[in-house]
Image 1 (cartoon, one colour):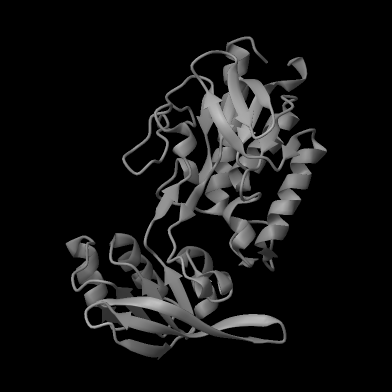
Image 2 (cartoon, rainbow, N blue to C red; image 1 turned 135 degrees about the horizontal axis):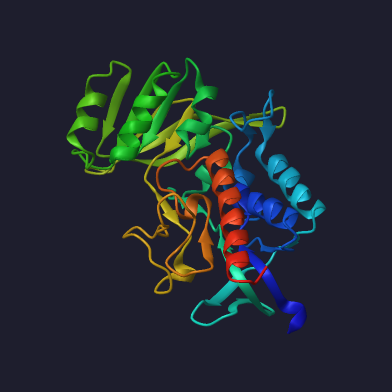
Length: 316
């Protein structure tokens, strides 16, 4: 069991987990990272990343995560492409179980991220990153003077549609109902925007596209009317899914304090969770920004918080 005891265990990767690993390993804390179902996090399903500082001409999402991982490993972190199945934070040291082994830790950093809620249709998966996106801030720039759809009926959809009019020539909001569930101010703001159109009482049945020279792109969608079932084909250059995010926190349900959506609660200005010695970084605790750079920033904070906590408790 001695070989399975660690000063810091990081659950989840992505910019938050890997940045935490870089800082923790440079502090000689010898962290191990359990990368889980999606090593590298959401950026591994993103193509071009142009808004991460330090890459003047952009970088592919999977490449950015690979570089981050190699940087962490260079300083002594160890990475395992393994799922954590159970945690016990009731006694110290903490227990973290995977599919195959049981590990213990003096501190734990949680960076399991959040997953965009998607439409769960096959064509959506096919064109994800090639005209289908779940992040307007990340990808809106690529749709200058093009026509796009935004799917959703809440504040997120209305806000993203308004934001996307900075780039697109036309933005159509697709909503399965007649009435929006977003706030009045956001509904009114969208209504006043001349670039925003509406396809109400509608859902996307299929995303249409093409593949030329090995490059996929979206060419349109088939919309289904929710009242009479009729189908309509609409030519379009991009589809943005804005039906919300779900933090990946089911593993910690009933163990750590979280809000009603499932985001982990942290003490303001820190990454401390409701249990001393357990820290949260990235989208798992961030419902507002959800950017790679902010996730990396909180990953740094979590490693520093963990280091200080271990020193204060004479565990470092």
